[in-house]
Amino acid sequence: MVSEKRSDNPNQSNYQRKIAAHRRRMLARILYLVVAVVLIAVLYGAIKYVITYSSYKVIATDDRTAGTSVHYAQLYGKVLRYSKDGATFYQDQKKAIWNETYEMQNPIIDVCGRFAVIVEQSGRQVYIFGLEGKKTSFEVTMPIKKVQISEKGTLVLLLEKDGEHYLQYYDTEGNLIAEGKSIFQKSGYPLDISLSDDGLKLAVSYLLVENGVTKSNVTFYSFSSIGAAEIDNIVSSQTYENMVVPTVYYADSKTAFAFGDSQLTIFDGTQRPEVSAEIKTEEEIRSIFYDESYAGMVFESGDGMRMDVYNKSGKKVLSREFDFDYQTIKIYGDRIIMYNDKEWCIYGINGRLKLAPCPLTGVVSDIIALSPNRFMLVKANKTETVKLKL
Image (cartoon, rainbow, N blue to C red; front, side):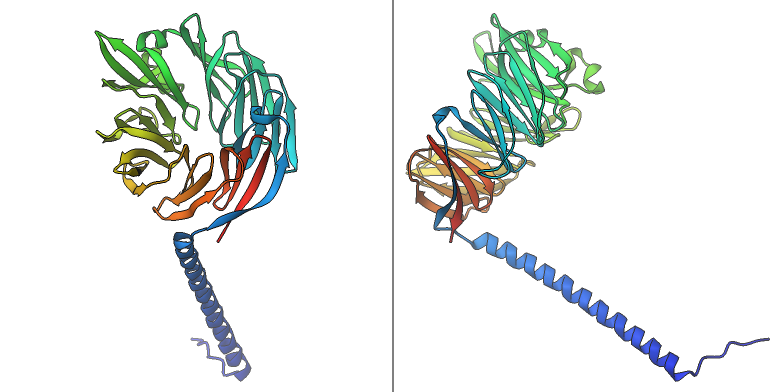
């Protein structure tokens, strides 16, 4: 029997001790790094939570002569400028990524993910854009009333002719996939439409009167194989008596908000959307605002106002009274932006005042959020990119 002897070589033993010590030092460094990252994240979150701004400074200005006919939208974190004459996508305030010309009397836009669609309202022109420029353009045979695009570039057009409404569904190349008319005649007058991010589901709010009673129908259509097996592609529907639902909005591919005059309804479902939450109120809703994460409502409250904000599960995440006399309210991420023709202010989704009411120089028609502390102020003859100041 042969036995293996332990090495008594002092050099080898010393080498092994050095390796073990090196491993311990590396493990300690990794642990220190993890702790440092966690502490930095906690510190950043705490600073972000408590930090407030007192004013802003202009960091870029773009003069323009087109006046109020020029409009702006955010596309994938950058700015898309569009007007009657064409559209330009900007890397920053001065550098254009692409430019496309067209002629429209009244252009309207919808944006989702990496795609944007610009159509001529009450006209027939359709232009689909991506981050690299125009994907395609085409004309339809009837006047366009509304448009919605998905993050895949598929789009839905709501058309109207001689008092009748039509639905047309196109792919990103402008090929007609589906169309119909009878679905609208049965349901009522369409007030609003919203396409899910995946482009497979469409929410439509209808208004109808039956036996003198006003009703609203929120109906969901599916363009998948699930919907193809159903009558008129309808996969679910909810009826409300004595209530008008003027706004529907798909927050993502499975959650939709329906804003009624006395209720917020949240629908959830990847195939057949169903009611997941109902927030009813006896108070008059003054305004609504929403984005991909939150749905908000503003009510009169005493001498001021109150905003209630809900997440996609229907949980109230904010109830905040305020006295700022806004004309426009919108939400971007965790920022709630309010402004009128004289000043603006910003609240955080945590209810803290992030920017105290701050004077605006000149009349501002729109404020576009570029980041949590950078914004574009749209004015009649110029735009200003501003940064918030402590």
